[in-house]
Amino acid sequence: MSKWTNFRDELLATLKFDEVDDKMKENFTIWLLDIAMPLAETSADSFISQIKEQAIKETGWTKLRDLVVLPFIITIGLWVIKQTLIKTTKSCMR
Image (cartoon, rainbow, N blue to C red; front, side, top):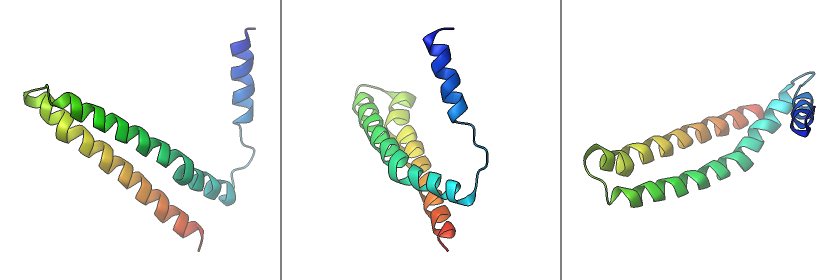
C-alpha cells in the first residue's frame, strides 16, 4: 500500500465515532463558531473584495453578478449559518 492509502485509512479510522452525545455536538458547534466561521468569513471577505475589483472591468450580467449577486449570497449565507449556530449553542446551554 502507498503512504497515502495508509494515511487515508488511519484518518478514516479516527473519524469513526462510537457514540455521539450532546456534549460532543455542543463542542462541535462551539468549534464551528469559534474556529470555522472566522476562517470562512475571512475567506469570504477576500473573495468578495477580489470579485468586486474584477467587476470594474466587467459589463452587463457579469458586472451585476460580481458586484451584487455573489457578495449578497455569500454574506447572507454566512450570516444565516452563524445565527443558526449561535441559537443552537444558546439552546444547548439552557
